[in-house]
Structures are given as C-alpha cells and as structure tokens.
View (tube, rainbow, N blue to C red):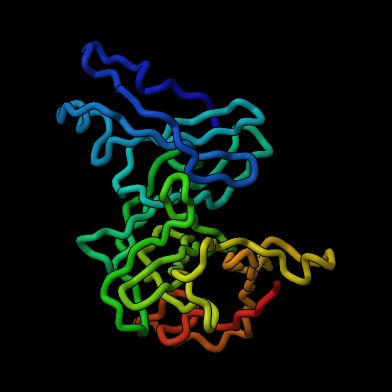
Length: 277
C-alpha cells in the first residue's frame, strides 16, 4: 500500500478544483487492512465529473500497523457494499482485492459488482470491469435489496468464505441470503437462498453473517478454505448461532443451464444449517 496524496490537497491549478470532503467512515476490514470512505461535498457538476467520475466518493485502504495508505481511483459501480477479498498485509507493500457492490432500485434483479486489484496494471493497481450479474432464485420475489446489519453506517456487512461473498438481503416476501462467486472477471449469476428453517431475519433485534471455524479447524487440522458461513441473531437477550455445513456436491448441470455457480438454480446451497449455539 504505497502512500498516496489526498485529493483535497491536489490542486490542478484551479482554486475551485480542490475537494471538500466529509468525515471518514470505516466500511470494511480484514486482517490488518481497513477500508475508509468519504464523500466530496462539492455541488459543482464539472468538478464532480472531472475529479470523481460517476460517484463523488473517495475510497482508501490503510494498514494502521504500518502507516501505509492507498487512495483508490474513481469507480463505476455505486458502492453500497464493500468487501476485502484476497489480502496479504505481511510483505510491504500490502496486496489486496476490494469488492464494491450495488443493488439498484432501477434493476433490483441484478447485482452490480466491481473489483479493485492492487496487483493489476503493472503493479500500480486498478479497477476491473463493472459486471452486471443477474440474480437467480427459485422464489417469486421480483425485487431485492441489501439488509443493513450495521446500525452505525446503515451499510450491509458481507462476509467472504472461500471464493464466495454473502449478504443478508430482503424482499417483499421475506428475508434471504444473497451470494456471488468472485474469482475471475466474469459476470457470474448471483443466487438467492433461504436462511435456516424457521429463522426470520426481520424478527430479530440484531443479526449478521459471520465466518465460523470448521470442526477440523478446532482440531488443528483445518485450513482457511474449510471455514463455515455463520448466521448470528439476537432476540430477547438470547443469542442464536447457526452454521452452514456443506454436503457432497453432485455432478454439475450442463453448461448453459443457468447454473448460479454453486450447485443448481433449485438448490444454490447444497448442505444444511446447524444450530451451533
């Protein structure tokens, strides 16, 4: 994460070109890296287009333990949600991939994503293409939106397990879990799946997704790829912890059959929920 100048200190010769930023908000973290977001408060249309492109937002990735900081270039997808994917903060400069995601009100059956890689463009880093990923579901909902599990920022907090990103989401019928496989610059379909049987996200005081260690990890024989997706809910002072255990994967369907990238359109989760605590 080589240091980069602040955009509000970068004056291109025009006194009106300097940005007037609001406060920083932390929006994602993983291992030693922290993602900060702030909004430019300027209302000048020419300034916003020239300095920020489609969205008047600055994202920066920091390593507080080393003082490294990188200000990212403008992105094309509205950053409703953020997730750090591959992260290696051990060897300086730290390497990472940052996902931004959007569920648009204009097209609520499509997940829009874009990934910044610090290793792309000859080591200088850059954003990959903006991808429009159709959402497949065996349910009848027509519109989905992120469920906001962070009361401080009102932003969804996804979790990353292996090569898949998971979000809590809501529809007109009930609450669901949205998932998308991120490896490769391919607009793979996103999938909608049910939470545990009998679990209603909207009736919990607080709920969030989490990464849980597998039984093999607890025994000292596991690896990061064996981590489990967890769902934690609080109701009436009691905490419920659910873990999703994958079962043997059946033969994949033929290419072009609408496979969501996990198993099938009818069962995007191939496994079972277990009440862990």
